[in-house]
Image 1 (cartoon, one colour):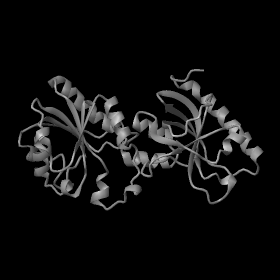
Image 2 (spheres, one colour):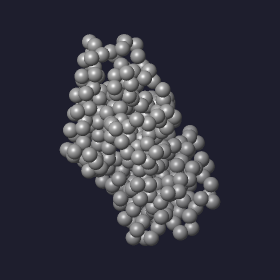
Image 3 (cartoon, rainbow, N blue to C red):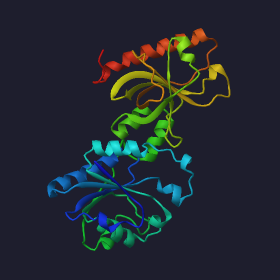
Image 4 (cartoon, helix red, strand yellow):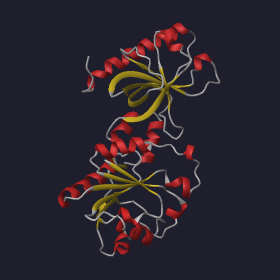
Length: 318
């Protein structure tokens, strides 16, 4: 998959002579609603024998439009993970636009002329609620007026789950509340993010449960504090384990939040390695233990609970 970064004003040399089918959206999480947009675009691209392209942004528009601090925005997918998912769903090319004031201040007509026509989109596909400026005027209803029959428009209707719209905002809420099953159902895959293995206090080794301490970007959405069944990809290999998100309350009241993962049947040193962490099931909340012995007993129970749940997953091998 080709990724092309665009900084406004757009370079007109990017215009593709053969044309493209262009899907529009921020696509945070690339959830099932987003996948429906990509699927509709992919179908049209196959029919027309054209490349399937996606236009998205490097940061959330809220950072520019609503003065949101970058660390206040909690992404379901950082750009690297978003690109991985888009490639998985069959996208040929991504236009990653730097979302700046200059880009944002374009009129709806200028956006259509500069970007949609400018990139030679033969078909533009977007969700029913996609906007490209002020919602009152830059909406899907008005897009045909700006398009002036220069490209075909496909509007993808809302995708509901239990009478609720599948949306990134709702998925964030579910993850922070520990409703991992509902979040994963809406995503269409296990929630995941990338992290760097760093040094910790190494308490887990003394307890018989060595852990990988994970550092991730401040703008990454971290699920609710608690214990989880996870799967981790390290150097293209997959390992099951259990993760703890919490404040190590047994060892004090003023600790920073940490993400610690105990990998099953794994003994290698992996400091400095990056891993993808896939969050499968929420087991329990964080507990403060009266003794180290009580903690070890609970950890043994947590591991047993995790192992008993693995049988339902096809990629688990005993």
